[in-house]
Length: 370
Ligand code: FAD
Ligand code: 5PR
Image 1 (tube, protein in one colour):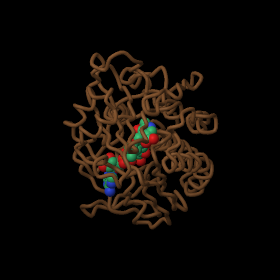
Image 2: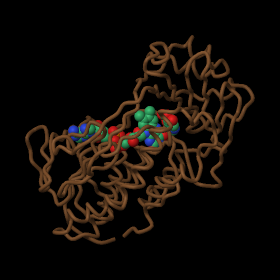
Image 3: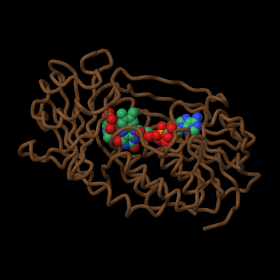
Image 4: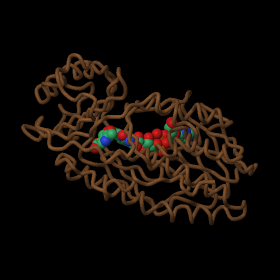
């Protein structure tokens, strides 16, 4: 590890911010992370992680902790009207499922162990490409490097004024964690991830993702213009009528809290301005079809830390431009493919994880690490 002694200010304590902060602190940076919420907590329910983010977690020294709180499914199965159309195992490519809270906890523990100064209740209101953040209480903090990891509604991004195109998809999803109730589900390969699609009599989908022995992540998809399908709490009668075999997990889903979200995509002209770099959803929010929003966030968080460490203080802005050039193509392609799947709903055909579609998952962002 090199000791750089330089100062980094990170806006946002989600997966992107925690990963960047830890990778920087482990390289000798003096890192402060600002999270506007009163505590470090994950939003949402469950998550699928692929090889790319698992390699990042490994490089941060946190893979054992992650493995003990996640599980491996034998297959990613796709069904249409409850008929199996494919069972994919990705030829041994590592992938894992877990709750978002567990991933967040693993990353937050890693950040604390690396010496990141974590400030909760610390809202960032703007950033300056010269190298500073302004907080809601008016404090201005200066930094050699500023990271905007403040999510899809990023203030760091919007205060600087990056050009962007935003789109919202026609479908959206309610995400929940429920008990697995495996014994009530009857015979079946209930350790698989199972993507259940129905087109008749209406478009509804249940993505079934076991996270461990006790907890199941359910993502219930419906078009936004279907008021019954998109109702929260979920409309139990509608979901059970369409997925009767899932009744034992839909009953607790109807009692759980949840939020219906439409998929958002934003495409920026640039991810960097001077000493500021945007990572994660602030830079490239994407549809979830390939389950790579957090994956690309963590990859780019890691590689920006490496690139910034390798640069001199004077050369930092140029190094950030070079970093964007290196990572942009693969991220943009993943975002475009995810948008295509969301638009066409063609994941339902099964066998969609071709080598091309797995490009991001196969990527190892840590190979040129310092
Ligand atoms: P966020 O997780 O949004 O974190 C931003 C953080 O910044 C938050 O803690 C927030 O409180 C804080 N913040 C915001 N504004 C400020 C401010 N002004 N000052 C200080 N702090 C601030 N990805 C996957 O890889 N696999 C999946 O299976 C997957 N499933 C998904 C399912 C759905 C339905 C959706 C919508 C997304 C899914 N994603 C998935 C994508 C993934 O959730 C996001 O891409 C990922 O959480 C982005 O991380 P982030 O750290 O950039 O942003
Ligand atoms: N994969 C995952 C996921 O959570 C979603 C999708 C795919 C892990 C939805 O939340 O295609 O919408 C999807």
